[in-house]
Amino acid sequence: MARRTKEEALETRSKLLDAAECLFQAQGVSRTTLQDIALHAGATRGAVYWHFKDKGDLFNAMMERVTFPLEAYFNQEESPADISKDASTGALDHTRSAILKALNQIVNDPRTRRVMEVATQKVEYVDELSVIRLRHLAARNGFLCRVRHGLDTASQQKNLQLPLSSDFAARGLHALIDGLIQNWLLDPQAFDLLQAGHCTMNAYFIGLGFDADMQDTATTPPPEISK
Image 1: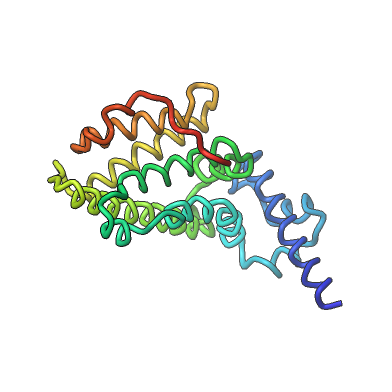
Image 2: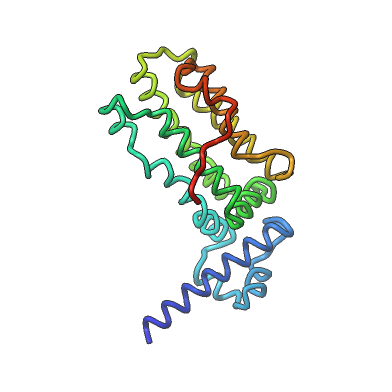
């Protein structure tokens, strides 16, 4: 009986998150109330507060269902520390592969695309939603940290002096990838996100001095990525 109750609670939580995704996408986060979400999920307002402290908490839980897989791509490969022990393993390839897998998930997974659209186009950092800004900052800072470590390791492997600090280089790459994602979400038919990410990222790395590794692949289609 207890197991069934736990399963029912998890099912209710999932339905609430599904409802939040749909309503946030359709009418924006600020204009969607917890009562709206409860009604759409076939639940009560009390059920919402049983699972989530407030709208910001619910929003972050919705984000975690898709951003955790994105962040995990940086950890599926070897860490920069492990890579540095083996010169035959490219730290730059590790960073590039993780980013391409994330872009592939945005393109091919409807839930990821929907939540990314909500996160970039349907939210305001006001009142109770200020916690969402903190969530965005944490995700950005995590990306910058992983990319910065990757660039430091890659430059050490290649005995390369970067033309700017690895911190600025990581911020530039983040601006490039984040800008491509946001523009693609506005009009997915305008360009191929995976190909654009592959080509522009390689061109960026060439600009940092990694031309020997990137010159032949800067304009070629991205490699096949398993879903």
